[in-house]
Image (cartoon, rainbow, N blue to C red; front, side):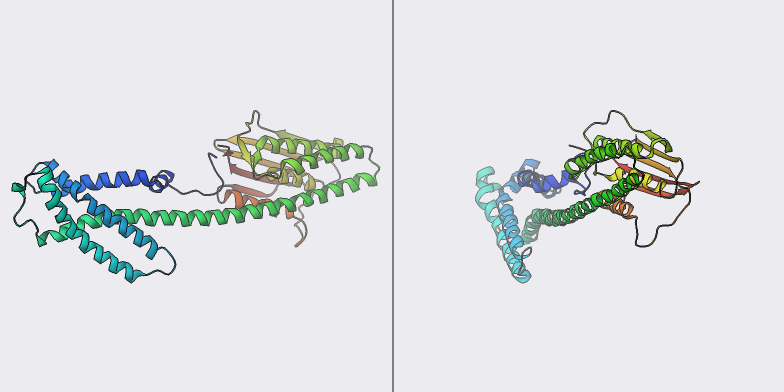
Length: 363
């Protein structure tokens, strides 16, 4: 997806780079070779290629030290039963051994292979160069160690995100399962009210209700689905309510046009607010009821507004009703985190809802 609900690593390019060994290691040794050649030649009298070849000959010792200690580090420090002291002992032993190996490579390969031995210092082994050789060994290993720590950190974060995503998906699925009976409960109350007055439109109401449940059963059991399907569901529901209210309903609806199927949203999210608008506008109102439903897009967000008339403001009883709204708010938090705006309340004998959520797209 272009915009995904769940969090990804912040720097995808860096993550891919350090996770691809061949790219990282080629870049590592090229940079090390150039930097060390420049540093060793700062106060030298020889041309740059002299110091570059000198570092190139010492490269096998640096590579051997770096990857040997990398292997010991992963097996002694990043696994159960860590042995730090054993790692320190091996680290010191390898440092001394490889720092002695560098002058041997210079004596055996650099002078005689690339340059004549008349240019070789006498004596060819100098103890004062050991600290410099240690720096040559530790620099690439230090860089590789940072990469190893970051890789383990990224893997740990990805595992945490995977566990968290599974938990959130499980909660969302549970909430959607609860939402269907909630809607069924409301529609059964509507059917009962129509049957008590022998309404001749009851059969048509049952037929449209059946179609609505068919959509819910086969289309809504997904993590996300196109916004157009949500709007279609809302339109069907409104047609259903028009049968019940007839001339008592004063309705205003505004829907966006030409919505592509690549624009996604969680199923039944807006539908819950529409259902509540019809439910609460008629609870204490026997006359004409007014309902307004507006869905529009602004920049990278979808805006939903609903308003329904109420004859009196009645606070909800504790422990009774309000499940649909609570359920929807929990889904908003689980799916969008802090990237949504939700406001609701009573204004001039109307109950109004305002919701702004970021657009989600298919890849």
